[in-house]
Length: 139
Image (cartoon, rainbow, N blue to C red):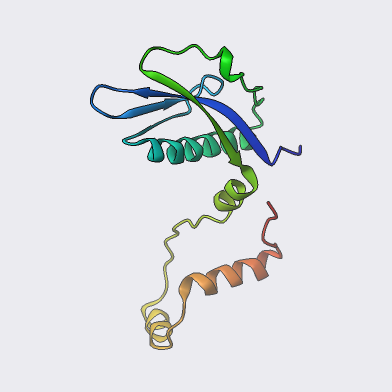
């Protein structure tokens, strides 16, 4: 299933008494963040929304239509902002993130590799790609 390249949803910025800004998305339950400035809130909202939508795409969840700004109910200490996310960048970042793996080597092989300045991660990646005949996924 082809997902859109861009999503645009309203976020509610709740200005707390302690100075923090809570961020929620009325159309995306569970997608929340917090910030201490408007600039940080916009950044964190985009990051939270991108990650949340990526998970929904991966899980095959139905992605709801966004509410209009005027339909979002607000309290006195709340403001609404439209947040957009360019998903190809999010998808690429998620697919290309690094994960740690622990490997066991004989001490002599480890010593020889260290002596030659071997990049263990690169060697393992190359070997796995060749062994499995796979290619880097396209996002």
